[in-house]
Structures are given as structure tokens and as C-alpha cells.
Length: 346
Image (cartoon, rainbow, N blue to C red; front, side, top):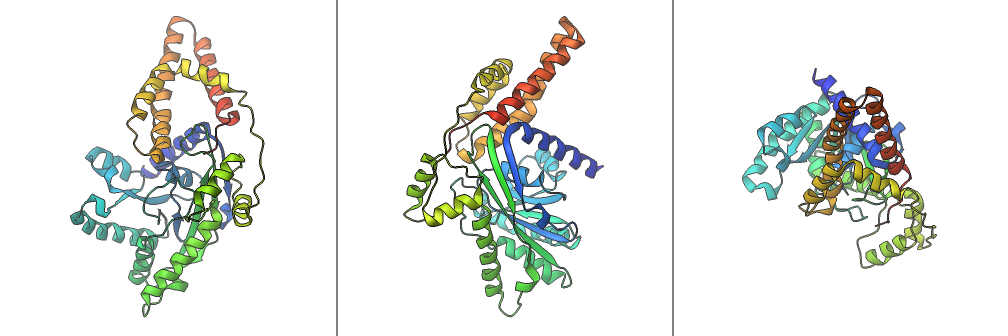
């Protein structure tokens, strides 16, 4: 039953992302082993949308760690657990709470030993800046702890790079790159664990810098970013952009006219109440990395309910055919706008 529920929610979210995004470009899916223990190490530029995108575009069921703040309410905690989400505690949650990570890590060891997939964000927090940040050693504690507990266990670490064309804007365009598997066991040395941690962190970090757009976080960061933005580049062409950053030879691209802009006003008119709810609630979002998270959540829950109510009203006052035509037209307009609208590069 749990597997059926998980697949249903995964399919529903994947459908929602299809309507929410302009394009999801997936590269390197062949690098994902069909069986065995896998840990996906993902960069983290855009809140909850990151794990949703990876989870719905990977052929395996995954468990993943999210910040403990999301588990405060008992009902939400139970709901998230049905979707394979587990809390990870940080210092900001309170020093006393950190001790709970021991049980969480033990659960991760067992998940890997059962030949399942685990997802973690080794940067430790989200940040929309186009740079791969310092990786915490939490993910190394999980993989090496699992190997220590289960000496015959083989673990593959797969770095995953996510790059957004325009995070926090709708519709968004995304590239997901799966890297080459790293056999964690090859780097585990009980006699020099510190070097083991340092080496595998370096391996993962180096791949992430190739799998996502990486502008070094130095004094030239803003200059390079502004130049890329001014030339309207396609950030989802990750290899091309990273080469441009290294060579400082950046080709300008023409800005396309947003010829489907009128459809946006039609969507707002058709969704006026959910749209007002979004406009009010968006003012309470104090981190830009959570804008997409809240917008997508509203888009997949409140909007469909509102459209369904309007369809029922049309059915009651007119005919079933009118209600069906309304539903099809609503989906078509939404799809046309999300797939053909252009947004400002940021």
C-alpha cells in the first residue's frame, strides 16, 4: 500500500512539474545503476523543488533527508514519512536536537544495506547563487558509517547537478545532470579516515562543478554573472556555459519576444481566487529559494481544486460537454504558456 501511495504521489508531482516547467532537460540517466545501494549527492540551489525534480526524474524510489523544521507538526511528520522523507537536524535546530541524527543515520545505513537509493544535499543548505559551495562531511559519515556497519556493502555515490535558467520565476527551465558513479568503498581507509573524507568530498565536488553551472565564488563572481545575464545565455546548456566561464568568451543570444503573454492574463482571470491567495502568501516568503516551492505547492493543490469547482458549476448551470470543454481549455492554455513563455534571465 505504501509503495502504491508513493508511486501515486510521485506521478502526481511529476505531472505538476510538467505543467510548471518550460523544459526539464535530463542528462546522464544511464549512469544510474538499476540495482544496488546508491547515494545521490545533489547541489541545492532552489528549495524543495530540487528534491522533487530529482526524485521524479530518477527510475528508482528514493529516500531523502530534509531539514527537520518541516517535521514539527505530527500530522505533517507522518505524511512526509509515507513519502520516504527523513529529518536531518542542524545546529540552528538546537544543540540538543543534534543527538537525534544518530538514529537518522542508522536508518540511512539500513536503507543502503537494503540496496536502496538515498538522496542528500551535501552543501547543507539552499542558495540560488550559481556556484558549488563547500560540501559538509555529513554524507561521508553516512556512506562510511554504512560500510563500517556492513563491511560487504558496496555503495555507489552519484553526484547530481541541478541548474535553473531562471529560478523563482514561472515557468522555469531546468537541467539535471547525473554524474559518473563513484565507488565509495575505494576511498574508505579505516587507518586514515580524514583523508578518506577529504578525497571523496573532492571527487564529488569536482563532478558537481561540471554537472551544474559553476562560477567560482571569488571577486570576479558578480562580474561574470552579470556578463552572462546581459548576454541572455541559456544556463541549462551547462557544458557550454562552464567553458565560457573558463575562457571568458561568452556568446550573446537574442532575447525572444514573449508572444504568449496574453495567455498569462487569461490564466489569472480563470484562477483569480488562487492567484490572490498566491499574491498574499508570496509576501511572507522571505527567502527567494522558497518562492518556487510555495508557488508549485499552491499550483498543484489549490489551483486544481478551484478549476474542478468551476467545472462542476458549469456542469450544473449548463451541460457536461461545456464543463469538459472548459477543463480541456484550461489545461491547454496552461500548457501553452508554460512551454512557450519567455522570462528574464537572473
